[in-house]
Length: 106
Image 1 (spheres, rainbow, N blue to C red):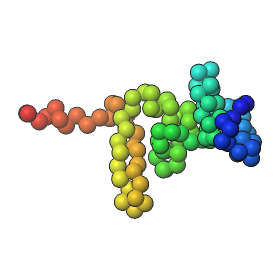
Image 2: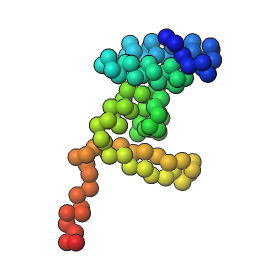
Image 3: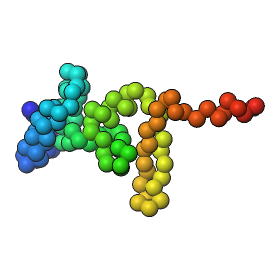
Image 4: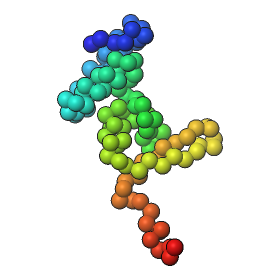
């Protein structure tokens, strides 16, 4: 695998190992495998994502899972964490959308 020149040799070794383990555990299409490989070649972990989508526990979601959620059009709701001064993305299913607007007469 060829990494970007800005990625150190030490990091390349760690990321290549992470990707190998990730590919063993995560079922994915060929297209998804190519995309996660490009993500890792740029110096990123396959266990992180560029959309800043987290699990319900606040940990970064892995690349493929986050990509699938992003592409599904799931509703992303941003809230503000007043304790840690960070934005939080909360994922809601489309079926769970608030329908109270239908009851408003205007």
